[in-house]
Image (cartoon, rainbow, N blue to C red; front, side, top):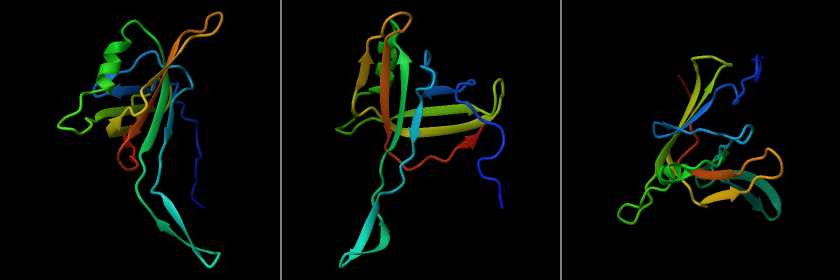
Length: 152
C-alpha cells in the first residue's frame, strides 16, 4: 500500500508567502490562511426515489481566505486586488501561494491562481482588548479550475 499523508509535517507558518502578482503580502495573521478547492458540482440522480449515479455538473470557483493586520498603507494592497473592469468584464489578478517544505527551506510547493477576484469586499474588524490589533479578512474567489501545485 502506498503511503498517504506520511512523513514530516509541513507548516504554512514556517515561511510561506502570498504574492499578488509579484508583490508579497505582509502582516498575515497566523493560522488564518484557508484554501478550499472546489471540484465540479455533483448532481445526484434518482429514479422513482432510488439513489442512482452522480452526474458531474458545473465548475465552481475555488475559495482562498486569509487575515492581515491592518497597516497605514493597506489601500495600496486594496488597489492591487480591486483592478478596474475592462470593457464591462471583471479584471482578474494573480495570487501565488508558496509553502516551503520546512522552516528555512528554499524549496517547496507553489499554487498559482491566475483568475482571482474579490467578490465580497474586505471585512475590517477592530481589535479586542490588550495586545490584539485590528484585522482585515480577505475572501478571494479563483474563477478557474482546481490548481495543481508545482515545486519551486
